[in-house]
Each structure stands twice: as C-alpha cells, then as structure tokens.
Image 1: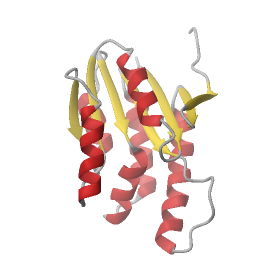
Image 2 (image 1 turned 135 degrees about the vertical axis):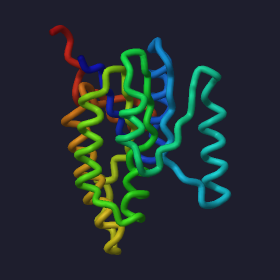
Image 3 (image 1 turned 30 degrees about the horizontal axis):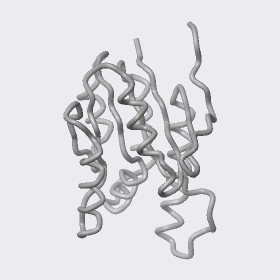
Length: 176
C-alpha cells in the first residue's frame, strides 16, 4: 500500500517551504526533513540555519544533495512523514555533477509512488520568467520543467504558492 504525496510549487520567497512544513506538522508520525542544499558560501549557511531554526525537536534532518531516491527508499515506512526541500536544489546538484537528470527524475518518481508514508516535496516553479541567456541556465530550466511535470503527475495533490497564498492545482482524491 502506498501513502500520500503532496507537491508544493512556487517562486522564490512565495511561502512554499513554510506551507509545506505546516502541512507536515499537522500529520502524526516520525518527521524527517530531507535537505538537498549544500552550503558553499556564507549566505547559504545563513539560509540553511534559518530553515533549521524554524523546525522543532520532532524533526530529524537527513542530507540528500544527490542521492534523493535512495534516501526516500531508506525512510520509507507507513509512519514516516517526509518533507523534501527542495527539488530544484537537488536538480542543480545533479547537473553540476554531470548526472543524468532524466534518469534521476524516473528514480524519484518511482520512490514517490512506492512511498508508504506521507511525503511532501517542495520545488521552485522556474517556467514563469524569461528564457535565460546562457546554456547551463537553459538546460536547468528545461530539466526543472520536466521534473516538475513528472512529479506533479505522480503526486496525489499539487499546490502552487504565490505571495503566501496556496492555490490547489490538483486536489487530493477522496475515497477509494
């Protein structure tokens, strides 16, 4: 039996992480925060510290900058509540490591489908702006768009955050 999945999208500073955490904290079970960020500068260290300060003692943090599907497989349990923040940082890490984003996308969707607990995934919506001027940024935008589409198709529920306001794009199915 599989659990439930929520995919939370939004732009930078849209409130998506706060919304996802609040939804996770309404659920009972063992709470795991799966962090995909890597801190390469002082600003990112501060950003990570702020996110950590927002979580209370119920949260266990697991680092997954590249091996996200394997971490989800390891955390898979009926009582697990897993919050992944965020998929676009994970994708950036993969691209910078010359990994195949298509293969990783397929493995992630498999892990989501097989997850028996509650999983909430956060991602940036990057397709609302202009086409970037450099090749790496265009490759990232294309890969992020494909990843977001695949995860949205896989997730049971999809919510878009704009200015802190949630808009349900794919409502959670009720009943058998």
